[in-house]
Image 1 (cartoon, rainbow, N blue to C red):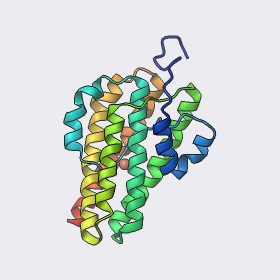
Image 2 (cartoon, helix red, strand yellow):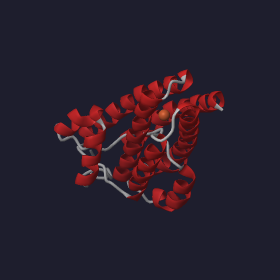
Image 3 (cartoon, rainbow, N blue to C red):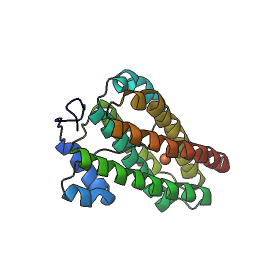
Image 4 (tube, helix red, strand yellow):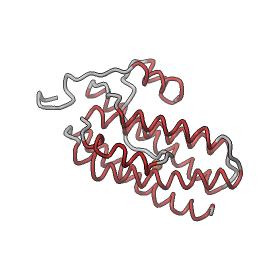
Length: 211
Ligand SMILES: [Fe+2]
């Protein structure tokens, strides 16, 4: 890495966040056990109330450095995988289950790439207010989803996935990709956005199907 690389020499291990992922994402446990910094990942598909998040953190999101952008992306991916697991456990709807399977497959694949980049760059993504708000909102949504079943669950899940993809894709396109300085990170974010735009279309169809 060149000395101008904004990721070089930075460090920001966050034990609390690492513990969060360790406890919730079995897919990543092996990586955590190898002490690979837990958090890069690229985009998402979470299910959160994004309206408030978008306005509350719009200014903060534009100020994030590369390590923080990586953390946000990874966090969003983790959260969406968590929602997908919930959908697979609670929904009997074929459209919802197909969508959730796709989220599990694609976000896991992106996360593997993200972790490989973290290892290659020898960096530790940094926790930040945007990541923390994503996690906070997702915890509330998971609690709500667990109280639902049948069509009510499917509608809430589908609506949230659609809103989330719109929010995340917009943030990627307008904020994170333009602001990312490291070329590898920028490329990964761009690749993620391509996948997530397809997810957004898929979410639109799912939302129509369950309403
Ligand atoms: Fe997605």
